[in-house]
Image (cartoon, rainbow, N blue to C red; front, side, top):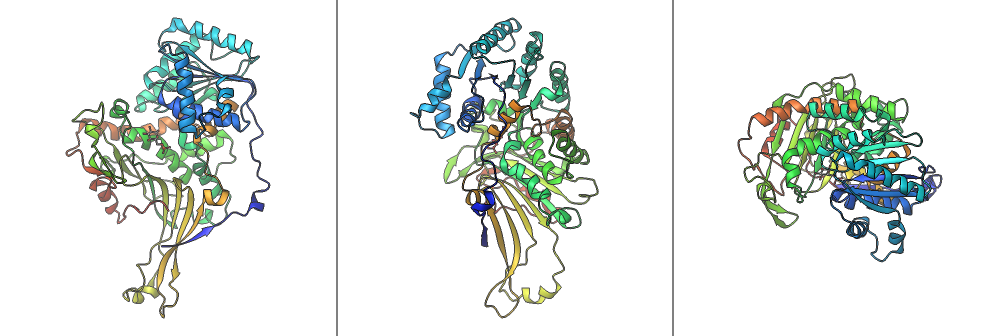
Length: 518
Ligand code: BG6
């Protein structure tokens, strides 16, 4: 398909501030679960980059907390993470400079008596570095420790100090069904006020996700047609080529619906579907998102399908099936692929199907939203179509590429030049973030960590939001738990998933868009 590139001219960017002016107050970030992968791969590299961008205060400290006594091993591991995942040269002196802000404290998360020691250690660091009362507790542990850590912080009066801003960041998964999410909310809110709680979903930190709101609400041409009168259906795909990457025990309990659909994909859906908020203030945005989710009626069990990958070939490499992965049950019934058909019963969307699918070990890595518009009457072209000169006339399609190749494309029909008749071919107008702005978008964690330090909750999940999305998916999870899938594995690694996902769309005369990416 022919593609027209769209450029941004440097003078259009001259008024854009290079960095945000707001810098958090001096404070301490305490990372529980500091010896885990997330800290090494995402959190420390993100904090390093924030520091290099001048977005962290001069006086700040990061205290890693985990069970094992690690000492120097922790510092070495974090350095390795900054180099490997932060794209920094190993001998860059800025790493030494940054490392001065990091320390480690060994503690068993569920040992209530150990928290007095942590409190004293934080006070010691604060005094040594002249830091006030600002604290951000980041829970990057296994989910079963969220509640004990919160309770223990509360018992030591660490959640509500006399001075400074204190917050708690809670990683996903936030609960594993509606009841557990409710209970966790209850436990969290027994210690922290809701305005101190940051339930993280790293998709909300992605520039391309935030750009959905700009695209919709800052551009006049799409808003009038962003509704059931003009849109035929919406597809949201989160396709990964990776498998479970050694996270077998976690994934066995999660599965694709819990891991990605209930959170990341529902966030994407809410940005596409919500009504314009009255401002970008946290409360307004969150309210509109919850309103959109609440308009989704219960999903019939036959509108949700699941799959599990067997062995196959992904990007030219042979890979094993899910059941052969490390620490996975050889007869596992966990889904590595899920697809659902949803409707949103409100004035804007009634009758427009939203299809969501997420899977591991698929053919290509791509997270995309495609909005297919209704066809106009094509009567005048009908005769010509049998002539063979043109491809079938395709409906307009707006594609928002969340990752990789971040950008937006609009497909429309164009006349094939130098043909005697009105031959039509689909062409693309394509906006590419990296080509237009000369850099790829930042890692979502940078933005979210900074917002949490500043106390801005706009890009974090609210208690009502997580409960609403869990309410939607819990009946499906329960139905799946009582009925084993008949044939697992049901798709080969390196394909687009199981046949049942195709049938889900066929019922409404739709097909998945599989030529994802640029
Ligand atoms: C995480 C899931 O939340 O998101 C992972 O636990 C998944 O299983 C990941 O791979 C996908 O994130 P991204 O940013 O790579 O699309």
